[in-house]
Image (cartoon, rainbow, N blue to C red):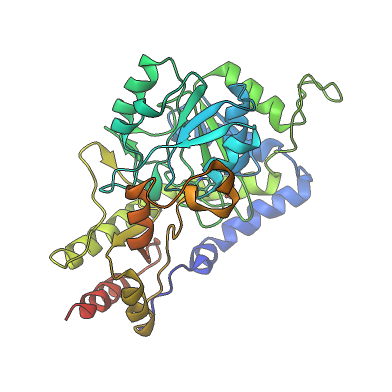
Length: 366
Ligand SMILES: *Cc1c(COP(=O)(O)O)cnc(C)c1O
């Protein structure tokens, strides 16, 4: 038996007819940048998130960047975020000239530790940007409480958490704005790059639409410096097709996660936990163990794919040398980075594959 870490071909071939028809319509209409398919997707995705507005972007990074532009982030401002994430969370901050101020994660969830946020707030702080890492909502209530106390907006990096719930309510509208990614490997993925900014504020949605389109609301009149961050028409059409399948796929991801949990409990591993407040969409299934590299080699020998999310926390990345961080600054994030191991989790996996992956892992310990 072979269990590839990820295989997008199975998803694509299962819905190939639908995708081809949707893409063919775009070719007929020649609406390649924004257009009716993107407008339709924005409407459907807003409904999906129980939000008033979703604005289509060419990537999740762009959506998060524009969210901070809307808050008028400027050089010298500080944005509080997590060091345990894909680096793009911090890109959004540094693109505005602002400085990422890291707060360590709770090692149990790998999400930002709300209890540590207040101590990181200064007079230059303009926002708090947590991440729902691996598809697991972070603990939003205590974060929002600190934000309210200091009159700070919260921006959710929801790139990995389409449809995840916090205390029963979908993530994406807990803060002022949120950024979603539709990178092909995400739970909802385009056939290319795409993202969305989600908000309940009409004013923010309007500004997001102007900023993604060269800073203009009227063609060839540019009120502020903007970007070419538009979603492509073909991606909107693809996302309309795939959004209809998302709940089925998420249900299967959760089934797989529970199957892993049942098969792996009792082993000397740290398994993902789902706190009472969270309903995870399991973008990733990340276990932890100090012998991570040896376990990974063992799985490779068994033909079970795996991956690392992420092997080096953001504060230790070379590109952020200028921030002056060192090993030991954020021990929670560093421990997660050293011990994390992502097992295959995607809707097309069979129960037999999941069992084989779990049994292979078990055999490391026997
Ligand atoms: C994927 C991802 C992003 C960036 O999204 P892109 O669409 O690839 O630009 C941002 N943050 C997190 C946590 C991500 O996983």
